[in-house]
Image 1: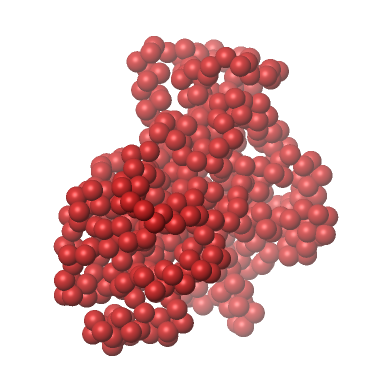
Image 2: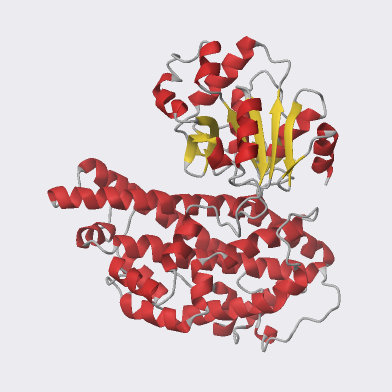
Amino acid sequence: MFQYFIIPTFIFFLLAFQSNVQAICLDALNASAKAQAERAYQLEQDVESYYSLIEESLHQRIVSLELFASLQQDLRKNDYLSAANLKRFKQAIKTHLDLRDQLFQIVKSRSCWLKIYDFPLEPVSNMPVSKKQTVKLTGIMLSLSAALNLYDNYLLIVSMFQQEEELRRIIDQPDKGFGLSSNHLLDASLAFNSVINREKVRYAIKYYQKRIDAYLPDDENRTSDPAKNNMLYLRMLIEQSPSYQMMQNHSTLSFLQNKIKFYTVASSDSLIKLEKEGINLLSLIFGNTVGLVETRKGKLYQQTEIHSELLKSLHAGDILLEKTPFRLTDKFIPGYWGHAAIWVGNEKELKQLGLWDDPLVKPWQQKIKNGHYIIEALRSGVELDPLSHFMNIDDMVVLRDKHMSEMQSREVIRNAFRQLGKSYDFNFDISTSDRIVCSELVYVSYLHIKWPTEKTLGRYTISPDHIAAKVKGDTLSVINLYLNGTEINRNHSQVFIETLAN
């Protein structure tokens, strides 16, 4: 739901004859070396902030799907929304509008970096790419990615709620209690159907496509260069966007434009028609929504022999780290490892520790009996998952505190169970306790270990690599190590430490 959807990346075309705008643009790209360094640093900070924003945006799509089903059921039963559902709906509208405004600011932030003399597009030469050129393309990619995300949100969220007349009415009602004005649907529909907006995005896509291969090799792996890692992350966001793929298909857009006008939406029937036309829109949108954004499956995925061996070797309290270079989230997490989780043990282990009937464990007994032994913080929240769910990965390490007493083990596991049901911490702030990110789960569970942290954007965070670093000080031991889908049997502790240095 977005109100003023203009792609400022190309605002120069609309204001080319206003000298003040042109001067600002020229100043932005022809500044002193010091000013350019400051802009490069600020861009890195903005991409880092954008990661949190995108994570929350994708999560809100999942929440919206669940909310829509609940609201539909309420309307079918009563012809009106219950007070509780009405409050949930109003809060969801407010959340989406706030996200829309933040995304719009990201689009707007590099409004003059793409200029009229960039066209017609010429092939990029084979000469080395300068720092200035890299910063420029990254800024344009950031703007383009945010614009595509706004389009994606319309396709999935706005058009979905437009299907119900009563929900349309509620969305457009002003509500001072939630700080809501009116006409959000009208604004969103006008923006989505704007031919001018789409043409601007297509130009940005053409600029991106002409240059990306020269600036960034076709490699899914992170590098030691933060600027290249930012481009890797943004490239994946752009190219996995349903709108990016649709923007290159005029017939698809024409079809949608005819179907989605003001309060007419892409209903289930419309989406089915798109499917029949060979355009797998649903899979594109939902693949992006669940946050996997996978280019392939992990090399340990459905490896039954490895799965069986791990079930035998894992102990309650073990820490699991994994790497998924083919997944969106790994493109931004700093360091080698991308995710952390805790193995809380099976029924037998929990009984041996005297925790099976503990008030924190008891509500989860049936899930544990069904093989759910891992607690992890995902975008959807903190969950109890099976090992098979976890192993869609390339690399994995099992870490164990061999010096941990039985009393400390019980405390760790109880602390981990205490986090179940909490929301994901999109700010990655270890000082907050109501929301948890994956590495924070380890941080708040292993209270007897002093973990390294890092201050970023004014808050303290802990990454999976910070957890891994405790192997160097002999706090944690490497029990199992798999790299690139293969088990490392010899010198695995040394090999593990070497991966952290890469």
